[in-house]
Image (tube, rainbow, N blue to C red; front, side):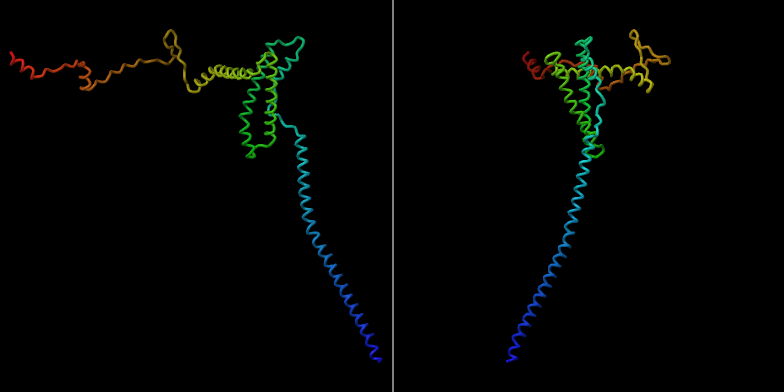
Length: 271
């Protein structure tokens, strides 16, 4: 009986030890699992943080540079494409005179001169814009010159509207034809300039090529000293060939109807 009573106690002790071992093993496994999770978390955190920090640094630097460049471009003054507008300044000065006031004819003349300067600037902008755009695409010029041209173009648009409004104050409808008048005056000035410098160009060509101008007095040329005109003997015409000579010498005879021999014989028989 004593042996039989001791057996349940030993069984309970062994069972408790087994449970304790199982609990210890499970606790050890859970601690290992948590340690692995922490290690994996520690390992994966730097792999995510580093790219995020890199992207943040790159985009932050680009944003800071962009904002700084925009502020610098805004504060930087664009150099004007045209230096000044003296004709506009003259008109404004004459218009502001009150003691004594400028005459209307003088104001109209100054306004036409202002319109002529505007026409010349418009032609220059139209001529320079395609070439400058091509150079800008190739990278030969910077954006400053292109922005200066665009600013000059907008300023010219406002200037043209102002000139038209000023012209309409002198005469109704003059604003629609003032630029046409300015174009005609520019063409006349160019023609006058060419004719004015024609004598200088002629003298320059004579000095360059050694040519001398012959003066004509009373229908006879006056030659410079050392120059004489030797009369050349007239050339005798060449004799024509026999065929052409005979054809030219004998005039064309009028056509005559030849008499038929049969009719003559019949007339003799009748006689």
